[in-house]
Length: 108
Figure 1 (cartoon, rainbow, N blue to C red):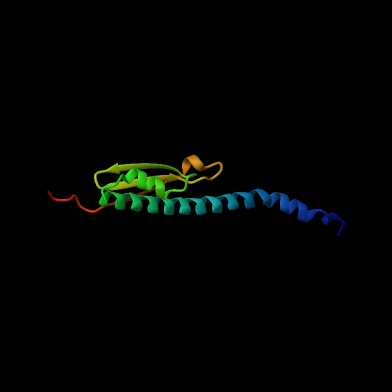
Figure 2 (cartoon, rainbow, N blue to C red):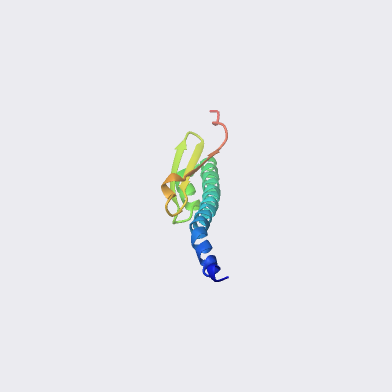
C-alpha cells in the first residue's frame, strides 16, 4: 500500500483538462442555443414590424438584449438576424443566423 499514496491526486491531475474541455463544450452548446432563440425572437419582431409599416431593424434590435452582438439585415420582406454568442475562446467561430419572412409582397 505504500506505493499507492497520491494515486488519486495523479488521476485528478490527468483528468482535469478533459473535464475543463467538456465543461467549455457544454457551455458553448448552451450559449449557441440561447443565441439561436434570441435571433429567432428578433427576426420575428422585425417581420411583424414590416407588416405594421414600422422600422424592422429598430424592432429587431429592441427585441435583443443590450449585450447581444448581432447583425440585422432586411431584404425585401425578409428579416435576417445573426447573433454571436458570448463564449470564451471560441466566440469568433460561432454564429447563429435566423430569417423571418413577413409574407408575400403586397399586390398594388
